[in-house]
Length: 106
Image (cartoon, rainbow, N blue to C red; front, side, top):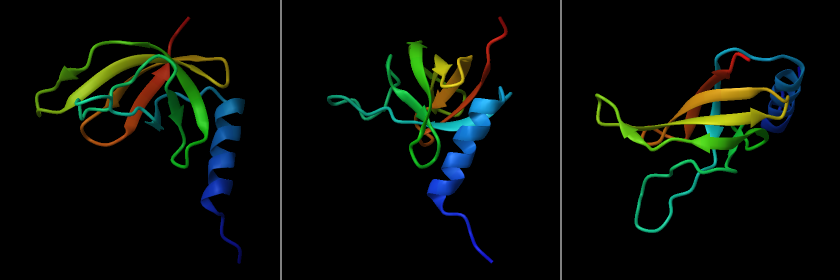
């Protein structure tokens, strides 16, 4: 019995993302903190990726981060997928490096 490597799983995820327009989707961001601010905010041009870092989308628009009812910091964004679809999503900045996004209806 063979097992898939993380690289193979990521390649399969990218292929599925390209061939389908996934509905609600869970992914990761590569935003980095800047200066003295420890919160890693999304900026125009940041990547939305698989767990291993393969790009699924690139951020094209961001809003100001905001504090939720549980004292976490979130940031809404729009991204252009490698499949040509525009996604709207939320980055959970203080809870890790993950995002939830869904296709924008045109």
